Image (cartoon, rainbow, N blue to C red; front, side, top):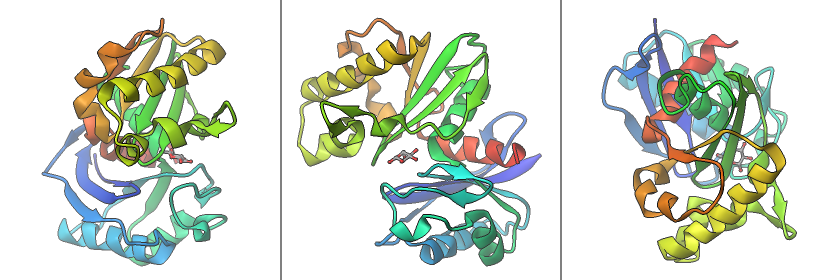
Length: 244
Ligand code: BGC
């Protein structure tokens, strides 16, 4: 079965049709810049545009940077406040004319990595961490997802973790990889002391540069890059539509 997977991010909205049995994207992905204020209608229009460029009229799974319950976006950290309380499943379905299902973006990436990537066959506790505009988390035990965890907002010394350790923070503060690794290490060290996971899978746009900072980590838990790299968000968004 094929589902159009779309990953809504703080800077770009990316999509491609996905074969959900194999986890493969069936074409090159399309990327469109995220509309400036990140408001609901303009984002829904971009999703429509991406669907149209694939002549798509089947189901669409959308990864979105917020906790989502019953299709409703509950919080807005890096997108417009207007998302809070919006029934996003309904909005996207109305605008695109296709059946749309939203899932938190990190949960989506985690589902993809557990099914087809670095988490495949991992029996214990696996924590997917996405480092991008914000920090997303997805926690699995024996392959089962606990949805909507928001540990990117864990406060460390009174500061939101994503403010210091997201990929965006590295660029904003012009950090060397060594300095950035130190911040990521601090964050993962706090997480491992709280969850005692068996594996961290590190995803997000920065996963393509993982060899520059993952080897510098000194935490006890193994930390591996997402195998689907940035594609995990798209593939997982498609898988998320199945969970509805
Ligand atoms: C949001 C999360 C999201 C993460 C990654 C955070 O700011 O609160 O819902 O998963 O960014 O995009």
